[in-house]
Amino acid sequence: MPTITKDKELKGFAQVYSSVQELIESAEANDPKETCPYGYGSWGESFSGWKGVRNRWNNPWQEGLDKLRLISNEIMESQPPKPVSIRRQRRWSESDGEVDVDRALAGEYDFMKQSFRLKRPRVKNVTILQNVGAIAIVSSSDLFWRSAACIIAIDLLEESGYSCEFWAYTNGNSRHYDPQYPHNFSAVCLKQAGDALDVDSLVKATSPWFFRTVFFASWAAASEVRHDKGRSWEVNKERWFNRHCSPDKQSEQIWMPFTAGRSEAVHQVKSVIETIEAQ
Image (tube, helix red, strand yellow):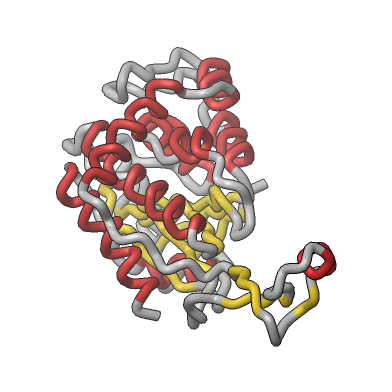
């Protein structure tokens, strides 16, 4: 079951999920008509019931993967900076290090093995946070640029030895009719630090159709949802997250701004790398 908390100071509900599966189950349980009416306009992903949503989640979403590949190619063509590797590397020495028996028996002079890092970072863990929502006038294709930027940045960081955690969240005002608790912050951890990068799952969980279907239905678990679903915003996002999501205090938090279009996505990927490199 999700953790649902009333926050009197922030005037809303915090809904925190341990997994995407838990989020989907909560959404389905709170949509008794089983109509899933909100997947419209999202690259044809409109569902007639939760069976369709589960089927989409449990199978590769090729259209989303193809879209990510195209965006990734566009971003990488701009040659964003690659982080300096923090992985331990090996070199050979004649006088210092651990003896490599095979090299010694082979008559190599440099048979002593040393390990070193090109860079000793202040932080090795990075938490990327993405607001997967937006106001209704934002198109599905524009909404997906931020997802692509997050996934590409995580891939670049992990190739260089950083360990990344990835959270999807929605933050909105006037989501609920409750006058004392009208706002809502919902979050789910999509990737723990140390987990392998499951690109297909990340593409689906940060897709416009997932936000406009699963997240929309899930808010009713806290309280009755307004017909217009309120409005996405970024107010108090750090306070919501740090208060209700038990973040790793040793991890560097990076909040990905709204990104629409190639130039903004390129800029955001570069910004993430530069932020971490500056540590």
